[in-house]
Amino acid sequence: MSKIPVHVVAGAATVFSTADAKRLRVQHRICGTTIGCLPIQPLQNVALGMPLVLMPEEVTLLLGLDVIELLEYQEPRKLEPEEVAAITEKREQLIQTQVDAMCEQHRQKLTVFRQERDAAKKDKRARLRALAPGPDASTEQLAAAVAGDGVEGGSGANTDTGGEGEARAQSAQGETVSVRRGGVSEEEDEQPHKLKRVEDPVESSIAGRLDEFRSLASVSIAQEGTCLPGRPVAWLYPTTEAELLRFRVYEHLWHQGYFVTTATKFGGDFLVYPGDPHRFHSHYVAVIVPWSHMLSPLQLITLGRLGTVVKKSPLLCSVDETGHVRTLSLEWTGAN
Image 1 (cartoon, rainbow, N blue to C red):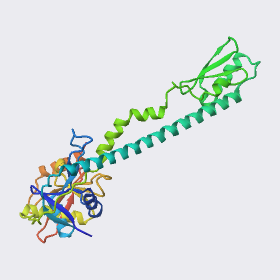
Image 2 (image 1 turned 90 degrees about the horizontal axis):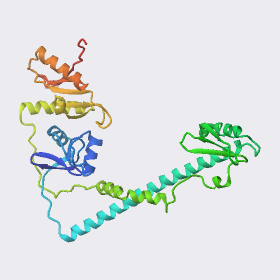
Image 3 (image 1 turned 45 degrees about the horizontal axis):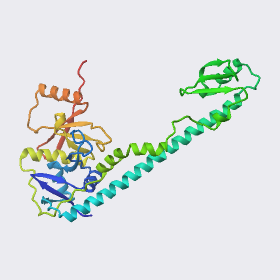
Image 4 (image 1 turned 30 degrees about the horizontal axis):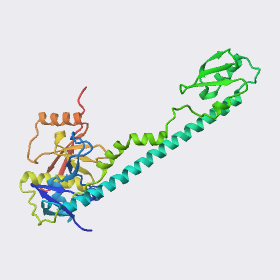
């Protein structure tokens, strides 16, 4: 399998291809950090999109596994007017295809809804005909027939003593149902539901949502990032003792089968997940401590409180004199 191209932009290892980002996440448990603006929600920074920036520890690990190749970033060339026109035309075709698909999906949903509604109305009329008293029934019997109309008959029946005689009740759906002497009238039987006459309610609903469908289709067209082939770039991380310590801890946790991401927002060095961060919460917040460093009681309490606030177990990580990574988790059991 070919190596994944990673372009170095201002010192940051960046992945522009969504397919490569997915491959890193699924096959190698490398998440990185997205920094791109989402077209559908540009005025926020909670959810971001491509490109993907890798942590220095992730880059060093992947280079050691021979999974990626580091390349110098090259600015893309300016497109000719003909190329811009061709891309615009292709994009419009893709957008229209998605709009047509959304309209068809919406049309099918409305059609199924109307069929189910008409079937329910037809079933209610059949039950009303079965419950309808004969032509000589009193108005009290008419009201009782409506009130006894099962689930959809409802309550609150009232009587009408005029003319033919009719009992009405308010159904659970807020509509008035009626039973006349001799059964449901033919006029009611031919009108399953009362709606304002329009040319086509389904098409009218679709026409009212065309702008929404087009807006969604416009931002859903994937803009696959591409970069010109650049020259190979040397990667020097880690260069200091502190950087080497961070990489050794990261490498150790990664080889244990965890997903490891940055923990800057949580007051630690790494977050340790038992599975994909999109599906799991992190169990540990890793804090790197030099092996020779003496922790005071105040620092231990601080770490304990940190774990309590972020609902994670603090994980102290270091490398001993023999070069082995040592970890120690803290459990905060302070009195309430």
